[in-house]
Length: 111
Image (cartoon, rainbow, N blue to C red):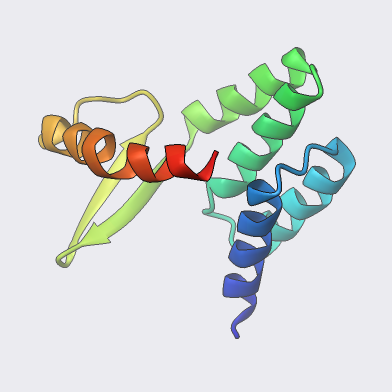
């Protein structure tokens, strides 16, 4: 299995188990960033770990870094770039409808 897939699986596993140790999250964060620099998952992991441990200042710093970054996905051969909180994408309504109707219920089942 490629290294990237191992890191994504490991991150997903720790998130699923709700590992909140900042030390463990920090180690995973740096591993993910090293192997997959464009991954937003590392930032989400750290923000969640900081929030769970009540480190709100650190949480705010990570969220600020996330806002400064973009995420990019390719759909049907076309690249789409997203920034946290940005709703200027031309298909914004369709995207949020898809998330609310399809993704949100799946995420709620995991809780």
